[in-house]
Length: 113
Image (cartoon, rainbow, N blue to C red; front, side, top):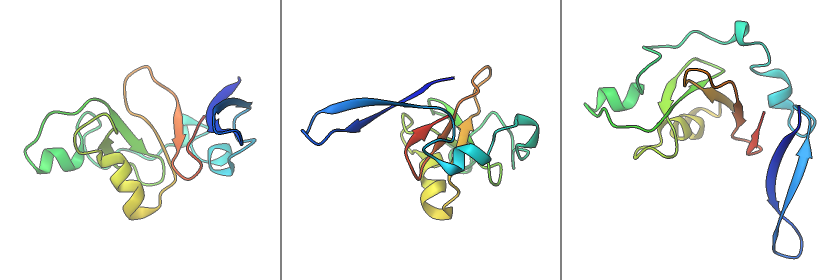
């Protein structure tokens, strides 16, 4: 499996770098490798925890923290609760909570695996 990440090159443009999972990111190499080891969602797996508490039901996609099982809305959603969770806790890796999606994201290195 090859993964791609955009990063700025020294000339000010963007270049595409490829890597195998975990080669550039220890977090993706160890957290969430086996879906059977994922934590259980802390709440319902089909809702953003914070949006629901606010009475809001409009989000784009859901993400699950692979450290504690927090379910939050993605950065395309108005409130960006998954990223807010990372910023508050430092939990480094989340995965998509959308049916059929299996990718993971490391917030620390901004790398997909």
